[in-house]
Length: 294
Image: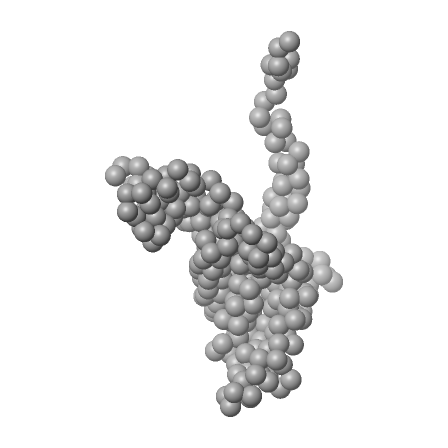
């Protein structure tokens, strides 16, 4: 009996349902936002066309540049720290045994908890008066730090909480990548006298570069979409030092009632995220091509 299919389907026919959902919930709203960005609308009166007025207002106020710098700083910390910690944990926990399985589950459990629950937990831990970290600092004779009230550290505090939550995701992806590294190659390198660091540097890491690119890209997108943690822990303060892109869009719509300004921010946000994602993939392809050439 032949096992070959009697009818063939075009690949795009199989992708059609997913593409339809993507278009309905991503591309259509983006198109609506692009259209509304050329209007002034407060949700109560009729929209008034203003051309590029919303974009000019964002540039003139200086808000756009501050948002980009603040969001990029937050994303750089989140992506680099989660990538490094996830890889280190994956290498350390890539072993058999109940203990290692328990630790892997414990680290990953933070990722499945909701953002609101994580924000509330760390809001209590970081309280400068009654928080656990403040009490430990006082017990050690140190002055407690106002992690969420100091404009200089609040953004990095939120980034640290985000890293704590998503590191388990990076670890699991790297663990999957490590399972694909041929054991025979590692054993051959060990027989040739290569130590653990040499095996990781010249064998494991080059094979994990595609996995690292995927983790970095998804972590970048996730960091740019941060909202719950800002809304629950700081509401964008103090003095807007923790206001990043998505929360700024929320403020423009539901606080300032400026739908056109929020739509303009959404368009800029999409272009920036698309450009950074493309840059990451270009750098990865360039490094891959250089390795092949050598």
